[in-house]
Image (cartoon, rainbow over the protein chains, first blue to last red):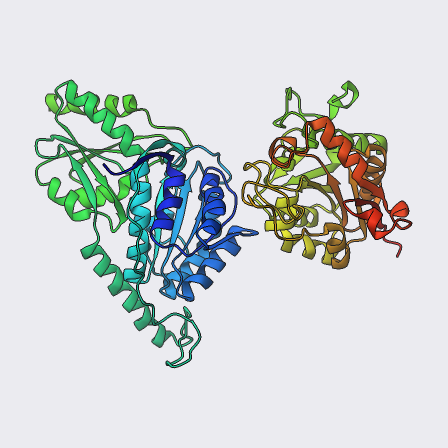
Length: 354
Length: 255
């Protein structure tokens, strides 16, 4: 039997990063991700690796840029306001094609908001977030186990595509404790001949994110866009539950999908044919999967912890002729399964009457 | 809070967010006493704070216009508000993490411009609100949630830093020195230009507990014992000054 350990989601991320060979971590205190920072403060020195509590999230993203450019597997973690502060650096990293892992344990916003869990950074994380034409790979765990597993995957994808990867999670999942199977550590890290490691014996490397001539910059951005297309083709991940016979499909990610799963079970007990589609990658978004589902299902219910962000991608995928309703909470308030169930029941009644 | 000062608090404020034994509630009272003794009308004042425990001192508790801003940028917000409304007496009250760590750049540039602000930095030597992490003011060797083996880095001397950057009034007192601290706040409020007071305040729950500094009363007593007035410190040997904190006025704009 593999060893299972009870741990909070934030700790599972930290341990996942260590297993994935994260050589350097930079972070700044902000609730609700502090356990992650504090765990790294203890564990990274134990492993003989780098931990720095920085003077700000700006310093963290900049140190991350430096470590990634130097060929390190590196990570930073923060929560919503800190993630906003890091956007300039993230845009530069995407432009310079630097692999790194960015953890955002989302909380209620806008502004200082509060320290409750939320998913209000969806647009910011999945559509770019900073300035310019770029995308970040977004992974959305829904359990402590996935906090570990997807953190490990985040490092793999970052190196594979030379692109920053966001682990987009929230305060509820970060704080909740669940059993986690500890994975095998990654032992072989990829070569990074592009890294700035000292130029002895090889051509000199340049890492930047600019070309002064607009005519020269456009081809560079084109290469980025081609990369994002490859990511869209190869990296879509999702989980489907009871989709085969579903007449109504809930679409939800992260902690909202946990509420949705409970609502699904309650609805099934009432004889309602409800399914769940849970995107694991938010970029790339499973548009085609949803579009295919929409060939046989016409009712969709989006459950999210934001006031209608994620639903826009669902609508884009299933088309405007489908019925897409929203069950949401925002501002740091959890989404009760009963709230989702009420919407399911209302939608089901109308469907029967139609 | 004594009854006579309650008029300075927003109606309906019953309890504060401060942990038991926190020094920042003492500091809150001392700031209000200084304002009261000067006979200032709070309607002619503006209080600006950032994010952290100390930022709660004016906002939302003070019965005045308060601007609760984003983490670290407090001095910049206050600069904007002062320039828009030069007649207002603008007071910044925030913590060491907010003003000196993430906001360090704005702190030195505020001092360099010598903009007319009264800045009170409540220094509890760690990040209290987020659970007790290391700060740029944490003493060497101190145990925090992110320095399990003890802090390896020397802390800022905030007063020297801000003075070097150009502030006209710079002082440091602990909340265990209430009378000099009240006098200092009054002087800072009456000084034109950038005034900075570092107010040392014990954080028993996050900092004291992990460093075995005892109960709140013991922390206050040890702070009292460690603080030495500048004039007395000049007569002490380096041996005698070990572990002491030098308090007093470091410049009052005349030198």
